[in-house]
Amino acid sequence: MLVLMREIKYTKYITRKTPMNKRTPKNDFILDARMRTGLIQKEFAHLVGTSIDTLAHYESGRRQPSPRVLEQVRRLLIDRGLAAEPQSPGEQDMLKMYRLLSPADQDHITAILNTMTKANTKRKK
Image (cartoon, rainbow, N blue to C red):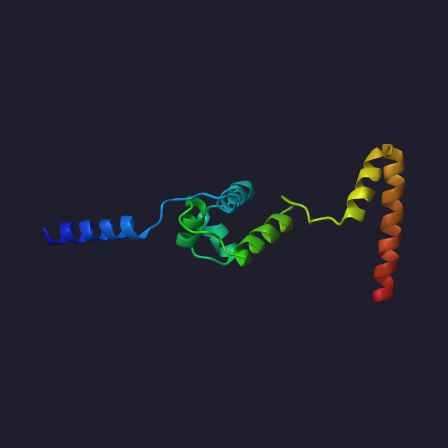
């Protein structure tokens, strides 16, 4: 009976103190990112630098992720090739022009960029 009373008190405390689950785009981003990586909560939480319980609260909407956690998730997606770095307007324009080129011209541009990148790397050493 005593155990049951403790459980009832605990349940009342949780339901009274815990705000309603209010999912936001940030919560959806966290859950979607974990699904895209194919990781379980334990692995994802470790890579993001948070606990499994905290991650579960982010995903359910019980808590909102901090800017630091959102940045860690963004970096994880970029590192795994699941998201791209933000581009400046100039980079976006260059990408649009590149996509308009024929495959042969794209190969030429890629070869030029590879040559320039290798030359710059050698100069920095």
